[in-house]
Image (cartoon, rainbow, N blue to C red; front, side):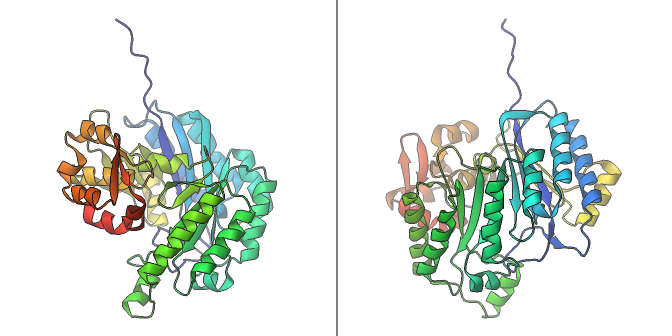
Length: 391
């Protein structure tokens, strides 16, 4: 008998740094403004949590294929803290080659020297939250940086040796015009980003923007204007050689965010830090399990100090929910969902599980191209509306 030499599949690691200089009014992420950021204490809690999971059945003997430092504002932490976490993760689990290690940074919250420190400790991809180059829109969004600070940050990223970086923009902002989107894109492209994310502003419950919307003080743009903006984003970035590989993400060939692709393709990921989410699915388990950490940083640090972990909620989805989530994340990718893969995992076809799909196919919102189900161009413009009906 031939021995089984297969190795357990590697996973992605997400590290949540919840601290921010200020809280943006559109943000519903788990972020916190603190008079003093307890960087040392929080880093020690993250290291404790890593050690805890290195001995667990779900993660032991598995290597890490991507690392993502998100927030909050991870660039509020020094390179030494980031390096300590990377060193511990590499020692406990091992890193695949090649590795993608991303760190989010806000302009104005990091200097050139810190970018060099991040590069020296192993970070090889930076994600810059520019959002816009228009001063009035930045003020409306509650951003504390200026357009010039974004330009300087991008110059510093290049100077520090980062060939792989991403730039985030937001469009569909009340008061914005279509030509304003073009101006933001034009300036962004002057920096030749290998990756660009362009997000349509959404008004999330629980945010100050949502409260203003409920009071009638904030009026979203007309849907037709937002669709025109989305078309402008798509055509401009395509002309610049950035290929759309996900609803809001564009990249040069081979420089897609491998970490986010793992999310969208339903891969395993371990989240550490306050409020971080995790997902694990065994080889013979069609449903998987999700869990979430304590959201408050003080509570998170207390719990990890007591038991090495800070899980406050675990959930194993119902079969229909798992199928919907599989389609929801997979259809975000321009390449869509593997129909044979869906059938193999759930024992049914997508259109049998969700009869709406047949209608969307006939309306040419979806196409089944060979063995894959994906959005047609018109369906991409209505994706959020269709996702709501699906989930």
